[in-house]
Image (tube, rainbow over all chains, first blue to last red; front, side, top):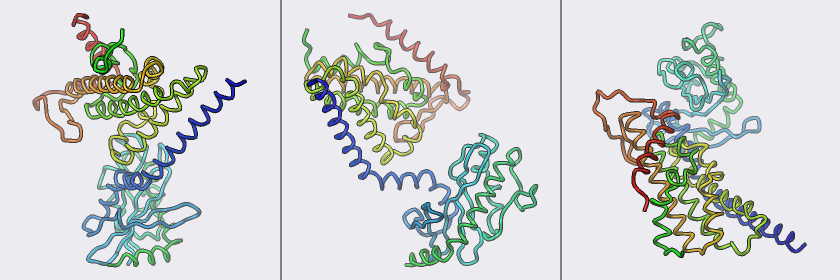
Length: 197
Length: 202
């Protein structure tokens, strides 16, 4: 009996110590991990969209709630005035969800650029959505308020050859981002303006 | 025969160097030594876990009931692995992305549990510290050696950890990509074991 109690006691104390230690370290590193993830996963796409802007979009960010989930928005500032915002939305691709960063010019609601952040598409075919600049460039200048689709479905985007489903996934992510933008437009513009320096 | 602290430390560097003499912990060795950088990163992470789990197990060895000792060791090891995982995410995120699933798998690395069970639970804190450090550094050196050979033959370049790429082979060298695949790892490990066995044991 004494043995049993000792065993349970030792494991319980050990586990609670370990839990406490990990919780402490987790709290201590949380912010840094978030910044690192933004920098290395979303950072390249954000910086490509905001080429020629003056600020660090990863530092100038804010969060809004859309349909119960948090979405991060990154602000682009040019010549001292905040002009654009970029945020991530998701579409169904061939191998799973595709994350697409969409940059929007808030003055005229046009798309500034898009960039793929995370995907699990076929290497060499669907993965070109991330690496092929020509495909991404087709989105620039379109209106964020219109739905976007590939040409074979009556839209305006040339699909990547051999990767129609991936291309549709990117288009649906862009369309979804447009719907989100319309839902949150007032809040977004208010928040973006507050970054004015 | 009682060994001195220095002997406990140096045995991990040659006599009991983990992957070659003990032939333990092969899963991470074969999987992550595609490049020198990955190998060193994995080795340092394992060393950190080894040293701290050895010290803690040795400190608590009289308190831990022998019937549940393995469970206690796993709790201790898993804690330090999670610490390493969080720290790597916070400070060396690109390396964390490359090593991925193999960091949490250090928990079930038989070198770590093996040292806790075979050494730290029977020896004092200082000796366990020396043992953990020695075995850890030996493990890191082995991973670095394997990573270097595989990366040079497999890609023709060498990524120095945290620095830059250097071209080792001349430009006309055609990379022998077999070496950075899994079978190349087995063959490379086997050949290195052969070479080590050429050196006679005392």
